Image (cartoon, rainbow over all chains, first blue to last red; front, side):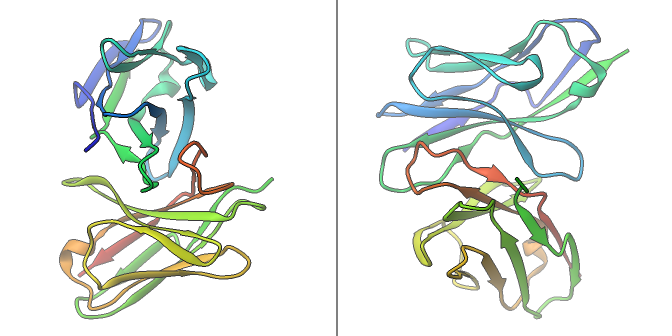
Length: 114
Length: 114
């Protein structure tokens, strides 16, 4: 069975600092990986997705993620945090198993300090 | 193009009642999935519909059901509500039913069961 682990339920950074949100997956088949962001009282917004075309994926709002098969990781980064980045971030995996459902990590709440 | 819409946004019910939530997918999208989000269990897959057929179902009791109409709009129903059903219910639509298709989420319906 596939699973997604997000290390750190809360991450706090200063405005302008590097953002690094960690995601590891376990899967016996090649995964499609996604990062979503959720602002308070809202749904999930797609940040970026990995579809095997390129290991470094660029998304919206300056975020990017790198797929590392050897480490089974798909960490999300942003060079310089902005106050508006404060939100909850979810890593998710989709697999070609005939059962099409996203499996989500438990989420990481990002706090940005002024 | 309009995004995924969900109605109502907020709902308060009492134990034992039933509730129906509605989801309108992005125009042209034929797949609709439903997820439940709670602080304790996180994001969990409920079911997926494609071309009016339920394709997959998550590990939820039979009190949770859904359907999809010919215009791809979907409804989910929860009967005999329990306190534990209080959650944010998210609907997601995608163009097709492949595991590679990106799921786009609506704002959710916040259900409170008293």
